[in-house]
Length: 413
Image (cartoon, rainbow, N blue to C red; front, top):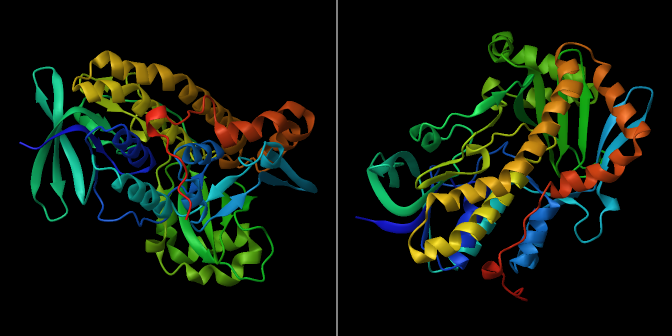
């Protein structure tokens, strides 16, 4: 029977960071990732300042900065009849952590995987999907998995950590049901070409508001990553309109991009995100802990979900490593992780719910002027917003530091 100290199910930012940190503590850790590679487009690709600081503490800063990336220095929204309102100017933060790095998530995950592979106690199994829990009495003892070729197996472990996302199979197998909060919109992601002559900083974010819809463009070097937002439950209607109808929607919201909407070849080019905002009341059962989106699905509002998941992973490693090295992980240790990370989660989700109500809700109900008016008021009438928001976005509440056992001196090449 195969046995490990900790099996982590899900190779996203939380799972890969947790695997790296536990391996540096000397814990035998196995990460199961259901896909054969990390190359999946239209995933969040922000690496926040607190995560960059963490990478520096791990001694990996030089390698990280050599990865292809661009820097987001502020978050601004257009306001009709006036200049954009900046709600997050990261230049006000002390360097070198005064920006958010924008990079494809697959580069970030490969970077973490390469760093973890240097640790002898780390194992990454690509093409392995965790499907169910192995139990003995009232305790989870491991997981069953299915490989990409259809074979099955199981791994026993002292503790199982579910980082398998908002549709977590392990969370469902454990009978843990999240409390859901209303979300007024869904998102459809796609790409459009970006020409070298076009203005705008790489890593810039450009939103456009319509009646009952919105469009967000994230500038990349040679393309725009576009996010179309529409009221929840309209996916079937949008698809019924066909690709020509969708192209017209995009051209109307961004006339300056109308000359390239034919790059959306078919509806297959759209990646629909069923936006959810939920949170488990209890993140654990005996032998199993849920973190990241498996414990609390985040809205894309503010783009802070990845950062929160990474901070969960750091706290989990810090708290569980000593118990894992002893070979016994009492449930009380799992409860400590939830107590440490629940308050930051509640704070972030509360801010997102306010954004949904004051900004996205009015847009989705056709009150086009609602969002700009709110942004204008907040950005220009409440000076504290300009001081607090940059740090809130870049670091989040209660940012974690690398545990002492995971720190390494930077390797110079």
